[in-house]
Amino acid sequence: MVAAKIEPEKLQRDFEFIITLLKEAYIDPYELVESPEFTKIVDSVRKKLDKPMDSFEFFKAVSPIFHYLNDYHCNIEFPISYDFQIFPMTLYVVNDNIYVVFSLVDDIPVKSKVLAIDGIPSAQIIKEFEQYTNTRENTSLKEREISRRINLIPTFWNKRSVEIEFEYDGFTKREKVSAVTIREYRRKVQKSEKSKLPYEFERKGSIGILRIWSFKFKGNLFADFREFLNEVFEKNKDMTDLVIDIRRNFGGRLRIVFEVLGHFVDKRLFVKHKVKVKNSKYNDQEALARVGVRYDKNAEGKIIETTSSWVITPRNPVFKGRVWVLVDNGIASAAIIFVDIVQKYGIGKIVGEKPVYSPNLTSEGTEHYLPNVKTYVFIPGSLYIFCPQSNRIIPDYELVITTEEKLEWLTGSSDPVLERAIEIIENN
Image (cartoon, rainbow, N blue to C red; front, side, top):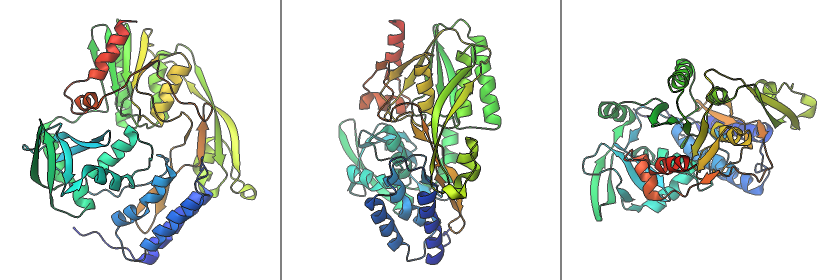
């Protein structure tokens, strides 16, 4: 199925709307929109929009702007389609190398290290796909974003098949791999393994392990999650310790964060923070309304600073044992806030890699529709401030994670990092 092409004039109108939003609505915490480099990137993108494009081509053209802004809450929606071509495997970037962490290709086993695709070295591929991410830091968040894109190489490169050169068990091999559609891939995956919920629980003796891979779910799934938590704490009152594993959790809804934290407080907890909001007509129904401020056209562009509090309400059953939160370096957004509250208010101890991101973060993006390319951009209009700008979360027990350990975990072979965390718990 060939995607419809959009006329250059319409592409340019949507693009100029994006630039208007970034100048008038974006909170721009590092004042990057005002820099000459931003202007240079914008001009470079404008020149590309002189020919018809589909929405996917438009995404590729404008992505460098969001990559430069380096804000994972400020982005353009990826125009995914079930007819997009994808590898029949899952590639993942770990420490500047590409590995196979799941495979439907018998001749390319899990844990293979990809050296080149169609003769292009992996390092060059990673560099190419960085422009399609919203993050410039060398973190697992960027690795995840790149990984999601490189699995779509057949679509990005418009190729039905490629030759993959890989290393496994000391030998270097080459295999031709034919692409499948996302629809076909998901159908095959469902046949090969059970689909997982974004949370699960298990016991290891007196230690409970609660895994939460995302705080981003709602509706019936949120209601099911609440019942799941109630059941966990009701049936496991003899637990002495609870590990909350939020590795690879890149955030979601604060309401879910507060739902979890409610099981660890016996009275209402007020979490105070400052909020900076940009006074803009584009933020009227979202960022401004959220902090009880009205748009004032006479103060267009002004940054308003206010103080606010979130309230965490106790939820029965309340867990009285020790709480440990297992993290990696790329957790972000609501996951970072979760960790900050746990540490700052003495709810538990933090174990794992030092997170790159500060608890000071832009709010989740306000959606703005681009009518011609029929997709959305997300433009944060506010900034939450919990601590001095230079502050970062320092784990109580910091762990250095090797590539081998991360691969063991990503492929589901074993979890050496969790095992190290349990040793810490048992020795304390």
